[in-house]
Image (cartoon, rainbow, N blue to C red; front, side):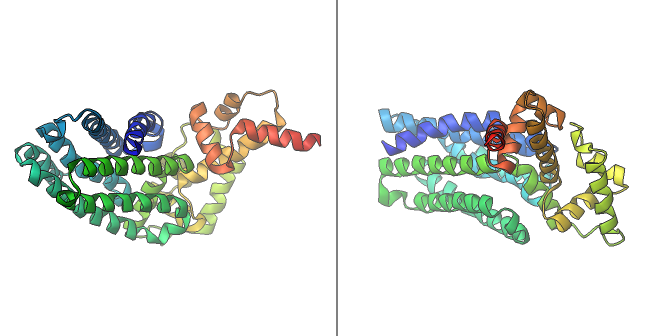
Length: 336
């Protein structure tokens, strides 16, 4: 029953994440990660669908080549999704075609060999993930809760690898019950992380660029640039421009995008996207209280957000509540 419920949650949550998280604004300049993330969700959802049919009706689909192809697709899809975010590499290379070899070969591998081999291959990808996250350890204070969630997902993935190696000892039915449950648990953890940090992908991408880059601020007066940046944001309210980007802001300051990103990351301890969201949410808070007749959507659009969903996500992330609740609570406090 538990495995069936977790499968159902996985199928529903895969659709929700695809529609709400993998939007263009969350993956600006990270088209590869966006596409591979949606593909990864599709693969996992299809696997869970096959698990459901097998556990409920005893279907033989798990023994078919399509299942092995899907199984061998999980690790490469996850790698090609996460590499641009964790390693600041946005372009595919010729060597990336090597990741297709196991997928193409999967249908020719016997079923009894395919499952342990797929999970052994997954262990190799997990080692790469662990090393990539370790490189970003200097930024862990800024992503404590998120890294805790992602670390939990890592442990679930590690348990799946151990599970795959133990298939002969567990028996087929129990194995697929546990495997389906593990995928469902991973979906729960990911959804919790994204609820707290909906724009985690863009933030991690900016941090990774700095982690792998040589400092670009050697000949820059950082204090002067931070003062100019503050003036542009507070006096000229550039944050109200919906199309404001790291590149356009850097040009206003006479810096490269890498220099501005490094400046904000090292001096303010946050990414440019987070810095921008904080200014917009701060202005929205003031407007929500000073203009009680203005709709929540109008407030969000006036401070630079491009849609109501973007506004709600950013407001909840920074203020810990929805704009409507913030307005209601503060209105009641002023009345009392």
